[in-house]
Length: 618
Image (cartoon, rainbow, N blue to C red):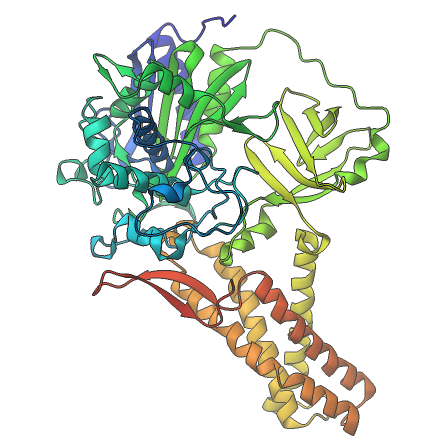
């Protein structure tokens, strides 16, 4: 039996929210935010906080300020697909290729990608985060043209794990275009915005002029001040992340979903369709959160919610529904920080849906200490990338360790085994699960709806950073020994041609490593939506040059030993430089740094072309 709780007094809710936003906006450096809560088919409360534009001191107004919602767009795309399903124009279990007229997904695996796979992020399509946006309207191309260009890459069989894929949802939006015969933005306007009375919402790019003057500015906080993002950002894949609206407009959409497709006298989904859309359709384990169609699940304080987060340059948002309570809230703020919605969700649920019963810690299995080695190791989000985005693997790993008391440590928390391959947090009700292969070797860690792949020893952060440190030391020593003679400082008697080659190769490799480290930490992540930043493009030319130069090093190394040019120590050092330079090549290739592939849009022909720089790594 579900007990109805939640806020009952708007003034009490306002006091709670005022205290929350006052503290968190200052703490997290958030210029402006808006919150709206819907309950029992109505807007219960809406309020703006701070400024939508710091320079002009424009306040955030719930029914006026236009925010860029990012991936919350996906909920409209999923709803549109469900509309077509109930009309008999599309079947969720069909192969996606059945509906594609101008291109086809590659048949890389025996199992086809279904429409349902797209809506649950189980398609096995790569998550592409590079070059999915443009700065000018003239650079935009039709959605189908972009998807047909080669952006859709299958990296694993469908239905195995959840890999969040914006391109997968963009493809779902393209199916809506193909079947309806009208552009995606027009379809959403006619079939959702108009029935729901969302007059200040748009998927059109750029947003209509009637909305442009009320667009909120997005910001990042850096070096003690707020830096605004350009308002020119336009997404190439709008069904996955390019939606503009106000808080009160999105409230209508929330009400419709909480009322199983009905808003007032209008209906965007049949009751059965809406209920099916909200149900779990994929999970990595029955005790873990899963995916509905478009929505993700959330379990906390004995409540089940369905939600979706979104992000755009300088914006973050969360749409959070509690179907059994007929209540939901929406929050968006104009800052890059992503912590605000975590704090808000937990504090809101603790305040209005407190848990009365005391937690009983799970008891570790008596024999588990003998099996901890099967689980310990490093895990990384299961997102295979053919671009330099793979570098994130170094910094986004989760370490599973031995808790020494019959538990596992996952990050900073301890978990005890409650059944084979399932572990419960010792101070809470959350779970993590593992998966084994046919040889009983642990291969995956599942946390929430995320899938993590167990890494091999040479993929771990410790090894990779150690390897990078080794390369730096060797290349630095090569520069000292082999380049100083150029300036008249001779440490060893080395033939000029060999010392110049070793010194130049090592110096360039050193410049690349240092430059890459600086670029990774200095370049704003949102710059990558426009493609590889120019400074990184220049850096990526260096490995192509040093790979060619490295070919000559083994020849000189052999000559030094055959002709005994200098001391044994000198020859060993030159050989170490040679081996390090040779080993540096597979290191570059592994991280997709030896050449790169990006998508460019030709302004003249408006055709999508693949421009290759160097040797493209497939």
